[in-house]
Image (cartoon, rainbow, N blue to C red):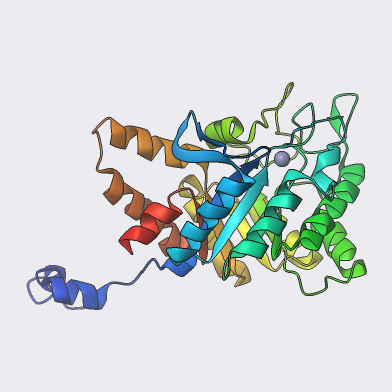
Length: 323
Ligand SMILES: [Zn+2]
């Protein structure tokens, strides 16, 4: 093989036009999904303390935010709800007039050309903040997936285009698929949080979604951060159960997993750049320690380069403005 001085890799880096011609990875607006938080009331826009420029919004404000999101060319939002009422069994999660159901109805009615994906989990709705039914300190699997199926059906009845189960219970994709099919929604895709790690990067999200557990943690259902082969088994089982899109969460610290999932399964693959990833870039940017815009784009292109087809990110609007 030829080598220096015949081979000079810098030749393609001198001219900016040549650099553009040989660039391998591009981020597109179409890659972005914007997560949003709905709260009861009207005229409410509360900034999340640990997430600058991220807000809890009442439905009227949320609808305007969705119009602005669509106008920027972002194709989809992911909706989380913070209910008025929490109880042991998370009843508001599958209430026809729950916060997410009402938010979906309003957005689908008022905003054209915006896909609404809903987060399907129990932790925002349970008084103990866990992702399912708790008995004697244990999160019950099979009882929980029945409720998740009800929750998903109620979201789709309200108009949700895609449902995204995030709980990491076993068998929940199959339960939701069966529930949706029986309810006549055979064409509604499931975006499964197939590989979700028990991560410290979720900290700021729990301020946003008010979903911190009152006791214990999520290690009995979310994955151990050190495991990669297990991630392949998680993704495989969700695909077998009928997931249409699989997700890896968080994104930045798990790019090896994104790459392995993409290469092994050739499925539409999403990656969630989570609250902690966002807040660290924001905070360092505010301190003047990094160039926020540049690091934001670098973080997103890195996730795309790793193999993600879609990126859920709180930077969606900021990135879309630059694209
Ligand atoms: Zn949860």
